[in-house]
Length: 167
Image (cartoon, rainbow, N blue to C red; front, top):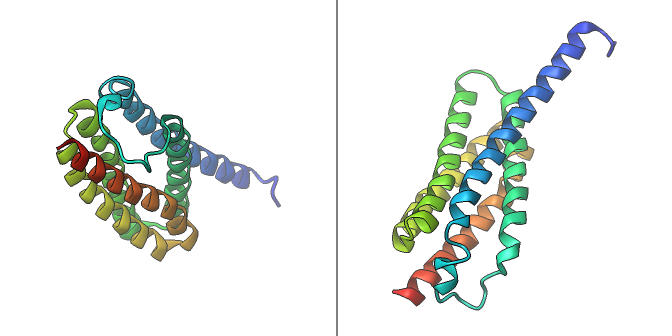
């Protein structure tokens, strides 16, 4: 019966863990956004950008949506798996999340477009690895990271084009 104390505790625990993953991902988003804000209206505007660059107003909503997907995806894996496989999945998730944040510091904070592109290659590989491991645990969890992978792939093309146009 759903009104048993154990069931309520379990449901509450699941909501707490979902909230924790969402807060973690949105906190990373906020820190990255803060770093981005230091340059997006100044230095970034001075760069030559390719014609396919989205308007500045597109980036924040897309990233927030992707971070929410990341949080839900990680939560699904957390709930579905235990032991060594979950530790590996969470470690990969942490690596890609850290690399994601590092890119903002390198590109916008240090204004090192070339180094950011190199770092983005590591991020891309980490996301691919995370998708692979998450998919093995739960297909929905892996699938929720595909839009993120595609967006980072696009970001890599954009980063490379900006590097090319600005020497």
